[in-house]
Image 1 (cartoon, rainbow, N blue to C red):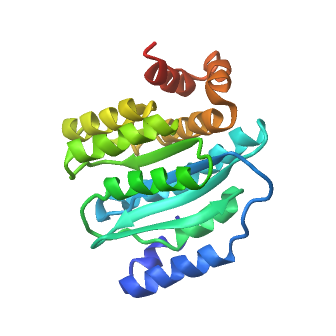
Image 2 (cartoon, one colour):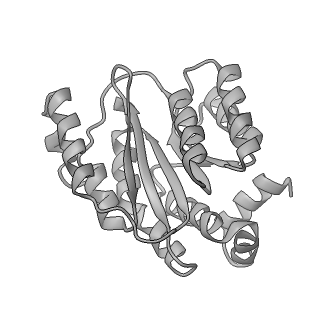
Length: 233
């Protein structure tokens, strides 16, 4: 993404301040657009996929616009116990600006914090979906599954998009998705259209629900993939 290489030269404090400044500049979405939380692993191994996600996330807004629009909140984790969330934004340019203020840093996964944040956001107002993009699960899976089950009770499905071939990570993401009522899918950073299609399908669910996903599934393979994961079909 444009500017991310420069961010890598910043100190952690400067990078955090850049993100907070970008977040303050973003105007909140008008009205009551459906809300989606877009959570990404920003540990060091993720820089190529962070760039990829930045490049394809506009498709979420494009797909949602046909169904009335979408508000997206960026959540990321990286470094030593850093996990931050933006306000909700209503267009791809605002989300790109937020993502450009973040540089990936080494650290362990903090998926539990993401899941708890999503649970707490849902307690403050309806959240239609959580999208989680990552390549590793380094936390206790039983703990993660407990919070994922709470998301399921709240009607907040997690769509877990897993890069790579790590079987432990794939199994962890699949279980989080299952317990929350969502779906898991693998993608390869060398095929950006796959992640782009998965994000569009998640946005269609967030704005149109299962009926919208079923309608899209007639012509969209990614929508069929998520629908099958959610319904067991």
